[in-house]
Length: 206
Image (cartoon, rainbow, N blue to C red; front, side, top):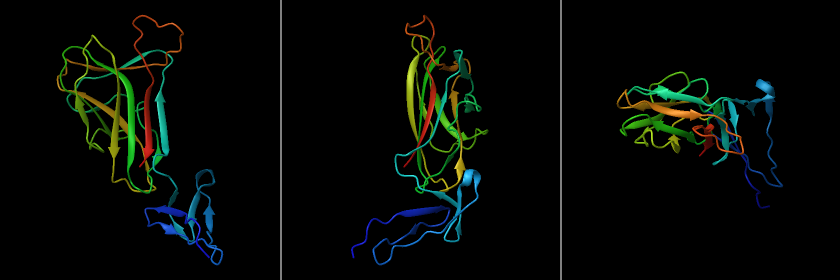
């Protein structure tokens, strides 16, 4: 008999288990639950976090949408969190590949000169080390509030482990403050001077 599709169950950080599924050998999984919310804690006696994420699957979405338009800022050349409590990936479980794509979207502006600024990621509550290469660039100064979207590729995560990354910012000249405009505009008429947008962080498996 020809074998059908072979599902793969990953037990981070152990190796994948592949079950041969056929009419002669249907295969069997014995799963033990008892984790948070009834999560599976072991498969066929192997313990570890069970992950079944597929490439492209969304692992976490965090959208900071304060009821009142809020300006966040960073003013140092060393990377600092915009708001560790609000602008982060949220908790997610690393996929079997150990790699994720973190996409950050926000409206940002530099208050004075157009010089080098940067965005980066670090573990929640920290600013070092960076978990992937930063983006360093320039943005319009006070004449333009630019919507910016940056995709960060994070690799070498431990499959099955839980992570949360803060979004960081920096500006090479402290006087040239870098600002982020968070809010949730819903009026059907644009309001003068109301620069704002949700600060959205989407984490996807690769």
